[in-house]
Amino acid sequence: LKKSLALLNAHAKKAVYMSVKVGKSFIADELLKLIGREITPRADYIYVVNMLYQMGINAKVDFVPKEDEKCCIPPQNVEEYIKSITWSLDTLSGKEEQKIREYFAQCQKEGRAPAFRNNAWAFIWWEK
Image (cartoon, rainbow, N blue to C red; front, side, top):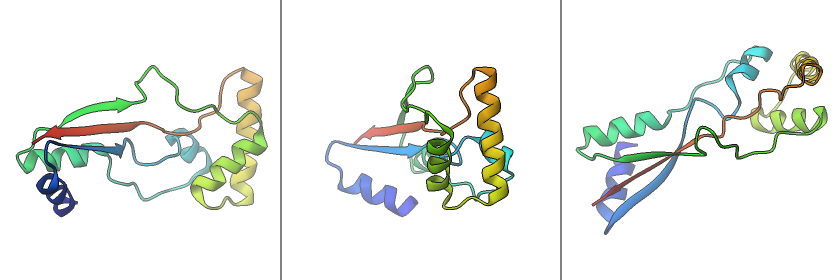
């Protein structure tokens, strides 16, 4: 990553703009915990910001969407919900799928949206 950041910085004429995922996964932590799925966390935006700082670059950071904004419409039914989660995790076991179906039904009964995605991104940029 450090080599890539250095290359971006070296080739930029005026500024560098990039977006980096916030959080360890695209799936909400609550949902991963529910199905008992362990994932290998990915480096989140703060790793990039700290590396830039070590390189002497004071980057600016903003977040998309803002904390009070929504960027995605959650699935409207359990089949869409399962399809979306399966796409993100590659596969679901029968046991995981059953837990998700029960969770979705419970959320509907309580009148709340089920946990879905972590769609936060950090917009990182710096001027040369």
